[in-house]
Amino acid sequence: MTNPLCLRGGRVLDPARGIDRVQDLWIEDGKIAGLGEDAPAALRGNKAVEIIDVKGAVVCPGLIDIHVHLREPGQEEKETIATGTRAAVRGGFTTVACMPNTSPPLDDRPRVEYVVRRARESGACHVLPIGAVTIGQEGNALVEFEDLASAGVIAFTDDGKPVKNAEIMRRALELTKPLGVPIIQHAEDPDLKGNGVVHEGWVSTRTGLKGIPDTAESVMVARDALLAEATGGRVHVAHMSAARTVEILRRAKERGIPMTGETTPHHLVLTDEAVATYDTNTKMNPPLRSARDREALLQGVVDGTIDCLATDHAPHTDIDKDGDFDNAPFGIVGLETALGLYLKALVEPKHLSLSDLILRMTRNPLAVLGREGGTLAAGLPADVTVFDPEQRWTVRAEEFASKAKNMPFEGWELSGTILLTLVGGRIAYRAEVPAGRA
Ligand SMILES: [Zn+2]
Image (tube, rainbow, N blue to C red; front, side, top):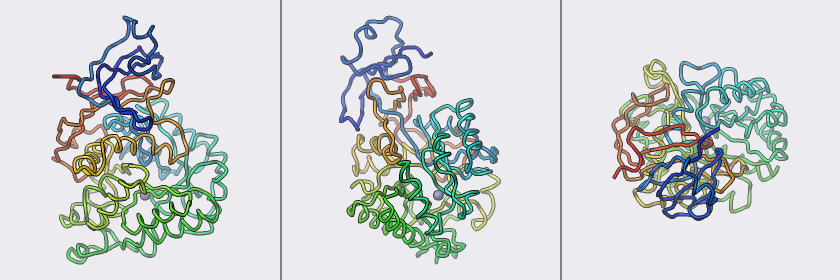
């Protein structure tokens, strides 16, 4: 049981319902009870309600990240469901969807049930498991889609790897279509990728690091667009990085093909120039690409071609990342810096309004999964994020709740300080700086 709460005097932003106004948000029995005058009079008159002053702050639906690697089971030295979800609520996220490339992968019912149970026991926020497409993520035999969906799986992916075989992808789309869930594609042609480690271009030539052409991604997205059109199954393109990919997705949507896409903070704030430092924290897959690719991604986010914003939170230990550039693993952590980096990439340069950014981090990711929610409508679970869009903070990995510290943003000054994260009406995170200071 949670206490009734009132978040007093914040700017309530609920973009999916066109709401942007200073008013109180009332919470009872873990659910949204109403906004301002619309809340039940009995609750507004109840002296037992805990009042939290959030004047000057934004109150919005809890942020949702559909691309997170929690590493449990099997790689608990990198991250666990407990630490990953604590990082999530510190970053303002109330729901994360976790990727199945654990050890072993989430390709059968007991493994999915294990994650669901661990999330209930140790999770600080909601965890939606994503299942593998193929057994062992080996690209050959398909999983039991219906069985996994009934165990709680909300989408399927072999992320970490692509579904390379077109016939396997075609059958996966046919079988998941009646379930109404997408296949999330880690779009990458393995032959074009080869043993590349950075974007193929001027920087790879200059540094001598082996390149991955942008076509490694877009060739597979073009193929998947044709398969989605032919089958009617839904494809969601993970971590889009290349201009050509944006263009293919834009055309596919114009043709009515059931396809969606996401990108990450790092692909919007950095280019391949960052890898010239040989810092292994700039090594991610897909790689940081050219300034032209970055511009196309920004345009794709603005015009809605790219539906939602994720993180691809990919924790690794310091030891993993300490090797030389060629041998270090791909990926960076992102949950605790996502809002600040998206504000920097999209809102501060006035590409997007704050409301349009929040839409892409709340309602839109759930829509991609074919799910309801992501709003502050009365009766929904009180998953709420409160942040100060102006208050600046400095990125310090040592302060992260995540077990992992691998990211290239150490010392960056960002705006968007998370003040309070409510999960089902319970305070899952509260900043030490008191909310509502003058
Ligand atoms: Zn991936």
